[in-house]
Structures are given as structure tokens and as C-alpha cells.
Amino acid sequence: MQVHNVNLPITVTGRHVSVTESMRDYAQKKIENLHLDYPRIIDAKVILDVEKKERQKAEIILHCANHITIEVDSVSTDIYASIDESISKLARRMRKYKTRLLKTHHRPRNGSIKHLAEHVFHEVDLHKTEDDHIEPVIIHRENFRMKPLFPDEAIMDLELSERPFVVFQNANSNRLAILFRRKDGEYGMIEPDATSQAA
Image (cartoon, rainbow, N blue to C red):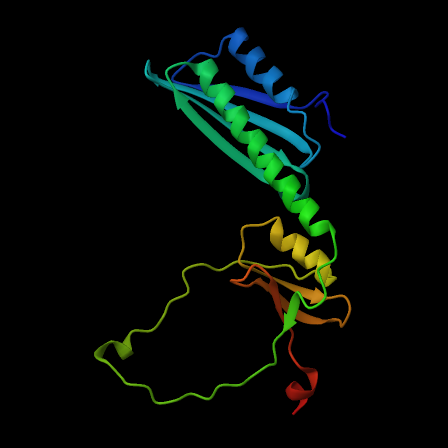
């Protein structure tokens, strides 16, 4: 258990303020004393910003294992109070990730993954409007590395991310699959039917 972050790389920098030794030591000790075992912290960055007396901000960024990044910030009239509040936010966020991990450690209940049959919908002539000439545009493109996962691993991957779905290669069937969160809180999985593809 990561009860103490020994030799953890912590960088403390300042904006609009010179970071004193007491500020640096205070921030470092607070982060080192985060008694949480998940996610494992790799390094931490603290940015202290004093724009004016009543607006003193502490921003903390943790880079953790499993590609998890946690960012928090707090503003108050005292830089040490801002650090304390940011540390409290970090602890709550880390506990949230730990809870997600524990929830997804168990295999899903029977029937909690619902397989949907593949359907092909033919184009129909809907009511046309004057806006029909406007074509949709892709505003974000992302390179995605497909990885083989078992369905329960895909559920954990989905729970630990903010994405609404996860695309993966099902290690059971060796086929492309899409796992998504349903409105009722359960999971759905779409997997192309090899026989209909061949047809």
C-alpha cells in the first residue's frame, strides 16, 4: 500500500509570486502525506499563483500510473488554505478512482452485458428542409490504438475513464467490440456478426 510517497518528484513553482521555502515545504509535505494506495502517484506539480491579496490560488497536477492525470485548484485569501483545499480535493478524487476500481474488480452479474443484434438501416427519404445542403464536419480526430481485452477488463477501462464508450478487440472472440454505459447503469456491448458480414 502506498502509505507514504517516498522520494516522490514534486515541483513547486510560482506565478506572480516568489515561492518561499516555507511554501515549498508545506506543499511538498502535504502531497507526501496523501495516504492513498490508488492511483499510484508518479510525480506532482504545484503551481502557486497570487494575483492579489484576496485571490491566492494553489493548482496541483498529479501524474499517476495507468495514464491517470488528476488536476485540482483552489482559490482563497491565504495560499496555505488554498493548498489545504486542493489537497482535500485530490484525496476525494483519488478515493473516487479507488471506488471505481473496487466496483469493477468483480466480474459483471449474469446478463449485465447485453448483446445487441446488428441491424442495417437503409436510407429513407425523410422530410427535407432548406438546411439539407449543410454537411456535418468532423471537428475532432483522434488516433486510437486497439488493444485486446476481456469484457470485464473493458468495463474497468470504461469506469476509469470519462469516455462514454470503449472500443477494443474482444480477447474471447478476437473481434472488434464496443462497450458502452446504458442509461440504467448497466453495460451494453456491440460486436459485429461475422456471418452477416460475410453475407
